[in-house]
Amino acid sequence: MATHKSAIKRHKQSLKRRLNNQVRRTRIKNLTKDLISAVDAGDRESAEKLLREAIPVIQKAAANKTIHRNSASRKISRLTRRFNTLQPAPAEQPDQLDQ
Image (cartoon, rainbow, N blue to C red):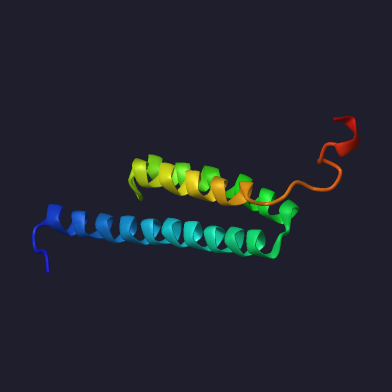
């Protein structure tokens, strides 16, 4: 255990940072899991809502150095790509008769 005053302070700070990082990483994992399950279920509205919620959370974690910025970019890219595999809603599909 630390005995110097500065070392004690650093230890307290590291514990706080560890807890904050853990919360951020868990939030990212939960949002990712929910988004993937929504995409697999074919629920476009829910998946779109979750994607819009997940992107800023991932970017903020990268800005706070909880995760690496390249890792954040990769996560966002892969989630977006997975979301784009969903078929558009019936109202959004163009009419085949117009061609």
